[in-house]
Amino acid sequence: MTRIALLGSTGSIGVSTLDVVRRRSDQFEVFALVAGRNAGLLAQQILEFKPKLVVTADEQTLDAVRESLPRSVWPQFGCGARARVEAATAPETDFVLSAIVGVAGLEATYEAARSGKRIGLANKEVLVASGELVIEASRKAGAELIPVDSEHNGAHQCLRAGRRGDVTRLILTASGGPFRNTPAGDFENITPEQALKHPTWKMGKRITIDSATLMNKGFEVIEACWLFDFIPSEVDVVVHPQSTVHAMIEFNDGSVIAQISATDMRMPIQYALTYPDRESAPVPRLDWTVGRQWEFHPPDLAKFPLLRMAYEAQAAGGSATCTLNAADEIAVEAFLREQIGFTGIASVVEDTLAAVPSRRPNSVQEVLAIDEESREVAREMVRKRAGKYLQNKSLAKAQ
Image 1: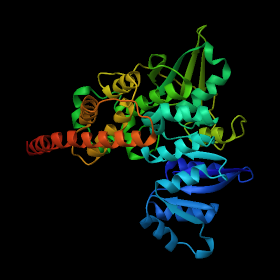
Image 2: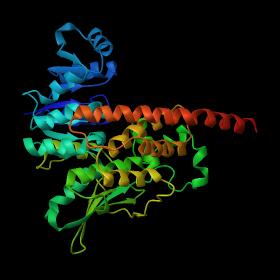
Image 3: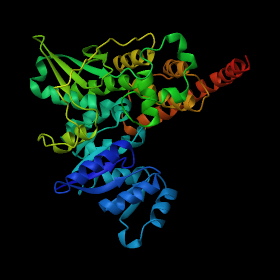
Image 4: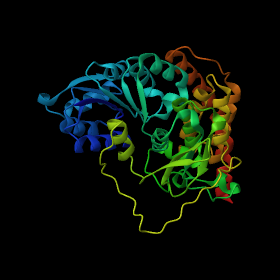
């Protein structure tokens, strides 16, 4: 029986993970549920999966969960960063599924790596913000990182087809988001409602906006470099609107291996949980008797400059990718609050990268300090733009 600490249990990845566990209760047991502030859903998960430990973001959420449950089913409770670390590193934890959005999951995942745990990584920010530290800790402790993101999970599967030294290139696919065919001249008028309509995946708000700007694919390039020991120039991105081919690798003889599957996150989650075994997963199968067409196009870096910035930040090294992530999160929040326009996201990120000096952090605490510094600079960049943006928006409505 594999005992799981699920970091981010009430998010979309967490819910899908629990569905896999539900279907394979003879193999997996939930030891710890770590959630944010969704007390109602967390209480339901406690009743069904009966974890020994439950961690929330704050005391208020913890109190709400307690009040909604009979005392007879109360597990051990905790809240905050220290409790997340304890859940991830507990002796009872066999497998850590890291799915907390943002840097909130960084410390717990890093400490799990230092403890030599097997980790299913569904949180891009862990490696984007602190890739060198996490990978070094994993190597020293013998921890195993198995990617859950569909593209990296696909790459992980492809790389099983041959020797890593024979691989010359990794190709990650992108749906292109809702604006791949939208003229660049129309980008300033894009609304949050339009940007939140992803053509393929149902995801949280930030990752959906990141997919619309292709920043999400930039984060995946950074993550792939750390996971599979590539340099940025060895990782290509192609736009594949059908989102059926998730990743490809090219060998030195020109052969290409692709990973293809339906767009259902339960497949990569189960793959990570059962690796190196493969077992039947509750996902749709592709019907090869039906005609289909797959398209592949190069991304337009002029329309989507954040992808270019991600390549440049990874190549620069140091804390540039930490600043990239922090600035993007602040910029996306500002766009969703209609303080800046769609093109303002890239402008805020670019100006923040120019303003925050890159250095090499030696601890997670230093990473978090750089993250906070970058966020504050990004907030200032938003403030500089917000007044003019709102004024122009009001003028446009009046005309």
